[in-house]
Image 1: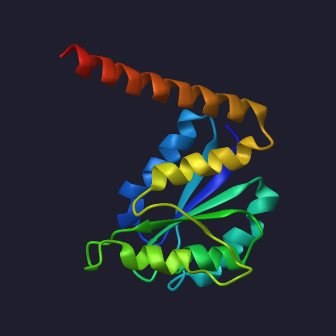
Image 2: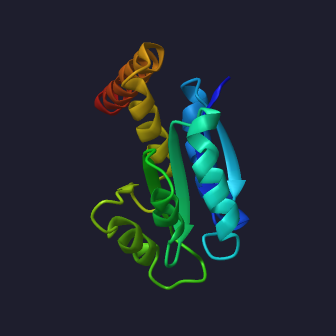
Image 3: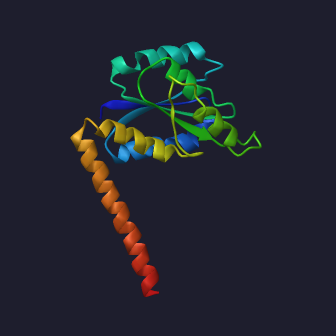
Length: 164
C-alpha cells in the first residue's frame, strides 16, 4: 500500500485517539505513516518531515494536538499540502479539548488548517480519504461503498427497534 497520508502527534499519549485516523484510512486501502513530533520540542524535525512530505508521495497531513495545539499550524506553515487538525482532549487540561479546538480553528488568513471535532481522528482520516478521492476513482468508489454500508446499518437498527 502506497503511503499517502502522514499522521503526526505531539506526544505518544495521543496515539489512542490518532490511531482512529489510521484505521479509517486502512479500511479504505490508503496507506499512512504515524510519527510523534513536537512543534516545540522537535521543531526542526517537524519542518524537515513536512517539507519533504509531498516529494515522498504524501498527499494529506493529519496533526493531532492538545492544549495550545500548535502542531497543525506549524505543519501548515511549512507546506501547501492539505492539513487536517485533530484537537485532542488532554487529561492534564481542564477545558476538555476546547482549548485545542480553538487554537487549531483560529489559524491566520493564508495558512488554513481543516479542523475536525475534539478527538475526531476517524473523521480526519475520512476527510483525508475524501481529499484523495478527488483524483482517485478507486478511493471514491470505496468511500461510496462505505456510505452505503453505513446507511444499511442505520436502517437495520431502525428495523430492530420497530420490531421490538
